[in-house]
Amino acid sequence: MSSPITSWEGASSVFTFADKPGVMALILVVAVAVTVAAIWITVRHEKHSYNSPMTKK
Amino acid sequence: MEQATPTLEELNTLIQMSGTINMEIFYWWCIALMVIIHAGFLSYEIGASRLKNVLTAGVKNILAFAFIVPTFYFFGWFIYNGFANGFTLDMEAAAAALPWSGSMGPNISDNATGIFWGAFALFAATTASIMSGALIERTRMSAFIVLAIILGSGVWILGAAWSWHPTGWLTTQWGFHDVGAAGCVHTIAGFFTLGVVINVGARIGRFNADGSANAIAGHSMPMSVIGLMLVIVGFFGFLGGCIIYNIGGQWTNIYGQPTTLSAFAFNTLMGFAGGLIGAYLTTREPFWMMSGGLIGIVSVAPGLDVYYPPLAYVIGMGVAAAAPLVHKYLVKRQIDDAVGAFAVHGFGGFAGIVISGIFLSGYPNMGEGVPPVNFLGQVGGALVLAVLGFVPGYLISLAMKKAGVLRVPAHAEERGLDLTEVPAEAYPEWALTGASTTYISTETAAPSVISAEAKPV
Image (cartoon, rainbow over all chains, first blue to last red; front, side, top):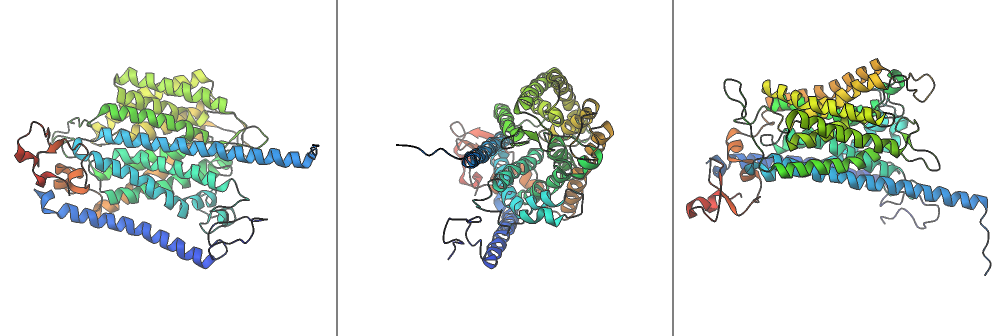
């Protein structure tokens, strides 16, 4: 169950997995990892582009 | 049907909730207006780029926004809350800003954290965008993204914790006053940018062997000028976000001193107008006039809450008249800041804070033992923030330069970054003729120059 609540009465943090720190940590790690990966993919794209024969013409 | 008369307690709860929701609404629209700053930067940088680099400039600007938002969530907001004392972490103050805190997501008992985080994330993205334009046409996308994250989610927010925070040490110890963030946003971004621009070097063809400069005109000055006007529109959201909505009480500035939106309206508009005229007097051209309007606002930002409006007008005019000369000086030193970001933000912010030291001295600060605003505190604060911006910008970009990851290869720069990096065409009715990077109309060109080869992949 991703819901941390069973009733809205007296609820505060209502975001998904708010009551499951382990799952939150995992999602946070994934979010950081995909951000870093996006930068790495940009680096690879640049390397490929700058070495392309068409670019060097 | 008889209606029950609400109790005093019920009425109080209603008023409180109404105020809370109004507060959220106010900052929500400040955030929306700040997004317009990015529409402005996008337009202005695209206009300032040559045809061969138009889309790359756009992608770079969009990515700055995209990477700042999550990284500001991951650690930027934590820095702001945890480092008001300098480099010593106050974990108690920062705990609620950790990305796994119950306040850092939908929470129906906390109407403030998300909306303030959102406003600060937009301040962060603005700070990174200030650097963006200066680096167009020769900086690697990946290097720019990394530098934007360091500036937008790290350096400026550390400066904000020191200088734009109720308990920031520059205020509590030196009496520093800068309600409109001329220091933590503009001075830091401008000096960080200067450090990077020095290392990234000039665009090919910008300077001759004898040191003289060649003008490299962007492909659309009207687009740049409209973009700058959009930035100005967005700044009303930015400055609205600099003021604290107190439920049931008077507005305060970020230091807790009472103020009004009216005060901000007087001085923002007078500074803006003064800046437009000041830059007109020294340049006569619209790009610098609109930049001058921005300089006018930046230069009066430290005292938006208390300046006599004609004084704001004169300050804006003077700083904006001088800024193009600062830019000229950089060009003379063969420093190629493509859009004058240092002159507008670095010089504009720094000069504005120093000038505020003359006119704001004596205004009391809040809190026991906190010194009043004073000239030395303002000058010292401006210097601290300039150094805080310049040193990391220079050192990190120097390391990137030495590692060969800062600048695009010369052949890619000459061919144009759109052709090299972006699988789309800015102006499809025009074709690139090859290494010369000249564009000609597809309607008049010989078929040979519109070969598939010349199209981006």
